[in-house]
Amino acid sequence: MLNCYPKWNYIVLSLVIIISLLYALPNLYGENPAIQITGKNGNFADQHFFDVIKKLVIERKLKHKSISIKNGVITLLFNNIDTQLIAKDIIEKKVGKKYITAINLVPLVPKWLNFISAKPMKLGFDLRGGVQFLIELDIHNLIKKIQNQNLNNMRDDLRKINIPYNNIYTNEHSNLEINFKSHHDVDSALIYLKSIYKNLILKNNHNNSIVVKIAPFYINEIREKAIQQNIYILRNRINQIGLSESSVQRQGSDHIIVNIPGIQDIARAKEMIGTTATLEFRLVNNNINLNAALISKNILPSDTEIKYMVNGQPVILYKNTILTGNHITYSNSSIDEYGNPVVNITLDSNGGDIMSLFTRKNIGKYIATLFIEYKDSGQKDSNGHAILTKNEEIINIANIKAPVGNSFSITGIKNLNLAHQLSMLLRTGTLVTPIRIIEEHTVGPTMGQQNIIQGLKSCLYGLVACAIFMILFYKIFGLISIIALLINLIIITGVTSILPGITLTMSGIAGIVLSLAVSVDANILINERIKEELHNGFSINKAISKGYQKALSSIIDSNITTLIKALILYVFGTSSIKGFAIMTIIGIITSMFTAIIGTRTIVNLIYSNKNIKKLYI
Image (cartoon, rainbow, N blue to C red; front, side):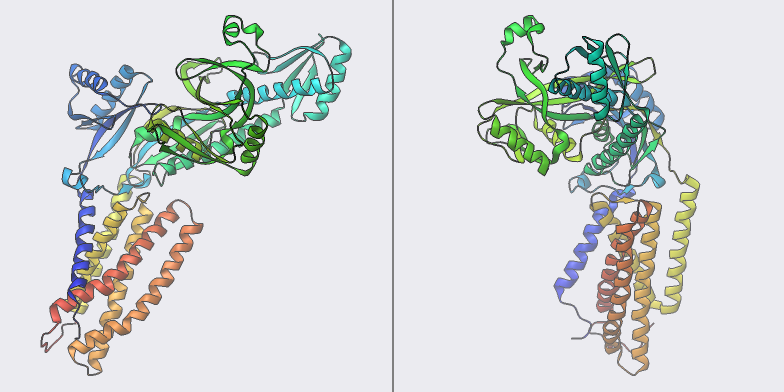
């Protein structure tokens, strides 16, 4: 039967429209300025802390809409941004550094929409603004770390060629000093070490000692490499937590600016961005009496040191690091058979070889997993740089019972949330040098509110003009095309709201308008085909059927070519180009659905099984 769909077609189309409408609805509701408070290092805010914050808000008479706690995160809603910013300063002074206090915008989505996880679209930095973080890199700490490595290497090198020395240490200027017994030893050491260390400046200090400095050109190389690698890792971290369309760029010699649009889950983003954590695997030294070493550290050999477990128990470790987090290619968190959180780790080929060789040679011994994190002490040095404190905890000690390859698991982590955070940090890469967020503030739309309004108005006027043309030129079929166009817009909005990691930018809106234009173009092809078949003498129902059939191939060809172009733009484009491409891809797919199936369904409902004498087209 001509122009008649089976019932299931109508049901499927209705379900698509209803679901799209439900997930598009959250975009009609506003947002509330909010403050989110969450614990650091995988910890949660508990009920007692919630009561403390609630009492503080009441005592300071901060006008707020509500205060709630869910999944260890305290959320306060305010009527305006001014009160939000005042409350943030007051709360930050109260909670100190154990908690993260972050500004946010919470969508005013009804509970029944929250129940189906319906959320508004994420808007890009150009449309809505967001939060900007200014991050400072601790290059001085990185230089100290490199000098410590040089210290260990030089100690080994001098021992290999039997050049005796009295002492080797790092002075207050992060330079190495090596004291020798005689002037002859100084000369021998200078000749040998200069032949090996081309990136260092070695000078005779005229008191049987050598001063070792890092060459200025090498410091610049270190700085450049640290900046680029940290930018790459920060981008990975932001992408891991679903904050797309964010920008990470360099600012000056040792600063990075991170712009996060949409202000979504900033508390978590702030913690993930600012955390500098890694793992080191070291061998446990059981050959020394622990109690005696605690009384007098002088009995400790120069290659060992005391570290502490999470419960405060001391352990003697060798200083030599077997492996670091730099060799970790993938990690995830899970629960073992005893219900304890674990982090599963996969190493690269080089790391796997190192771990396999080491464990094969040290079966029966114990290996410790040392968790290292740098935290801001709140103090600055004489140069104005933030002083970071290095916190180290042994989270696991395991007996080497058999050789270990490139995959293994770490236990001993406090809770599943910390295990999840640690696995994400390891998965995205270890920061080359510690960082510190020194500024955080909200930023308005980068395009300017007036430009955004004018851009949206131009898009709206274009669609209205298109609707008027279609209705005047194609009458009822033109009206059907416009209805399909509106349905297409609803579906695009719903899909964009559902899909994770998609952020709407101004260029994305241009992609939507383009796809809507393509949708109208498809309807024009169909309408012209129907008119052509009517002129050829076919009946109305036959003309409608043949019009859709003959226009189908042209519509598919034109949409596929546009889709290929959009895919190329997405693959090779950056930032706004990608935003335009992804919205064009979504729009083309939905426009083909509404232009072909949507309009045909409406036409079938109107003209199926009816004796139509005249077609208004």
